[in-house]
Length: 159
Image 1 (cartoon, helix red, strand yellow):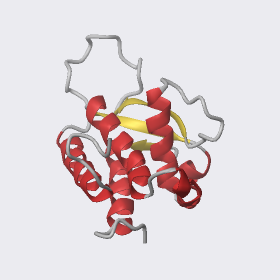
Image 2 (cartoon, one colour):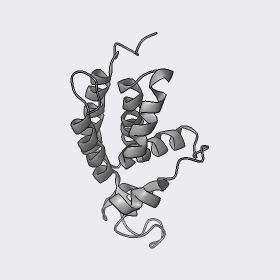
Image 3 (tube, one colour):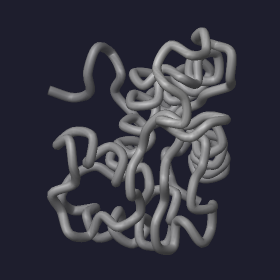
Image 4 (cartoon, one colour):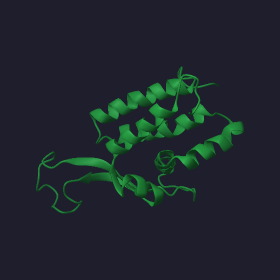
């Protein structure tokens, strides 16, 4: 089987990523949309350079691009509920953030929507140095899109 549901190449998967990005921006507190975005962003590298013969190329690109390391950690960590591979060192946790820290107010004190909330990722190591220790999902998604918009072309080659 090549591809899935008519998606057969990296350019088509990049179009899917752009669609997911737009969807995430419309509802950046939706964990489904965030999960789908980061999983697609990670697997786009595999679609760009498919097969075992390109494994070393994918490894080098990932090594050189911390934003892809973050995508991998989110995608693989979520798939297994927690990372099972020792090389995943970019993400400490992910969850809901807000104006007030979790537990500051007793449940029900404020009506839903009174205070701003968002999804965020707590980064570690080199990722934290580059992007900050706590990053809103929307900001991280912006960085992912900047990476892919600069690094994919019609010939399906990373620049």
